Structure formats: structure tokens, C-alpha cells
Length: 260
Image (cartoon, rainbow, N blue to C red; front, side, top):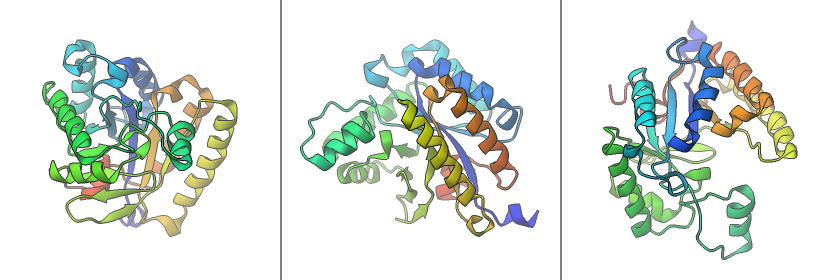
């Protein structure tokens, strides 16, 4: 009991949640059902994209709204995850090309100025509000968040945002180190490397010396298509929950009683 009481929390985070990805999201959560709400004890942080790749507003998707309402009723959390989740802006430097064309093709908030970011964030908040939802946290697609985007988040009174390696409290400026586990399944070599990298990262995070470090398990709907990825997440959840208490992602940043 003392080990758990003195440990940081773990969060299960599902990226790219949208009507277009709903079937895969549901399949992945079904595969993990023994460890998550309602069968188990682990709530899910749902990173919702308001108009994924130009889709219609969320309010027009009745089945998706009903499903997400049911998830929220079970204790899951909604976080804003970009707006379109698509990056059509020009690439200007070799470094930018690597970040936005190799690392990801969807770095929507990677280069936005404050005004452009603010406009999309307000539209995202409005789309969520039209469904009766709200989000105080923000995760940019691929975690690429420009300085202008951070300024806009602060102006709009968001509580926190996430990077690949940490969680930033916008109220205090405090950064919590917490590298996210995440798979890339676009190619066979990416899947092989993902399995090796994530296994090593998880083993390090579960070492007793890392008991004060939060664990972020970052799943994507497309993981549901690959049994190797699903097996990894099943085994990772079992191992994490044997050592750590669980919470939604906001609790990792703002504290376990935030919003209570």
C-alpha cells in the first residue's frame, strides 16, 4: 500500500477521438476493457478533435455524441486536441520539414501565430460547448505547440497543455516531466521500433526509482488495427496498474482533486 500511496499517477490517453475514428476507438477500448471503466478502475482521457480533417461539426454526429456522453458519465475526461488535426501550411526550413513531414504530417499548431491559434481554439471550445462538453486542457497534434499557441492558451484561460515529454501547468508555469509512451504503426519498421522503444521506456518508468514520475500511455485509434500494438497496451496496462494509481490526465498536472 505504501508503494502505491507514494507513487505518481498513471493516465490512459486516447488521441484523435472523432466521429471518423469512433469505430477504432471503441474497438481499442473494448480490447482494454478489463482495465478501464466500467469493468476496471482506469478512466480514459479522450483527446477530441472537433472537425477531424474537415469533417462536419461534432454536434451533427448523433451516435458519436451519445457514445462520448456515456464515456464522460463513466468518469472519462475530454481534452481539446487541435481543431482539424491537419497541417497544410508551408514548410520553410529543413528542421521544420523533418518535424512536419517525417515526424508527423499533422502538426496543425506547430507554426501558428497567436491570432490564428486563438481563433482555432475558440472554435474548438465552441464546438465542444455545442455538445455540452468543455475542456480545460489542450494537446496539440503530435504535441507540436508553437509559442503563439501557448500565448493563446494562456489568454483563453486553459489550465494546461502537453508536450511529448512533459505536462505544463499554465497557471503556475510548472512543468512535470512525463514522457508519453506512443506507437507509430505507419510502416513495419516503425512498428518494430515502437515495440522495442516502448518496452524499454515502460521498464524504466516502472523501476522503483521512477515511482514519482507520472506514466502517460498514449494510444491512437489506428493501434486497434495491429494486434502487436494491442497486446503491448494490454500488457502495459496490467503492469502499470499493478504499481500505480490511475487518474485522468488533468490530475497529473493540476493534482488529483482538480475539478472535484
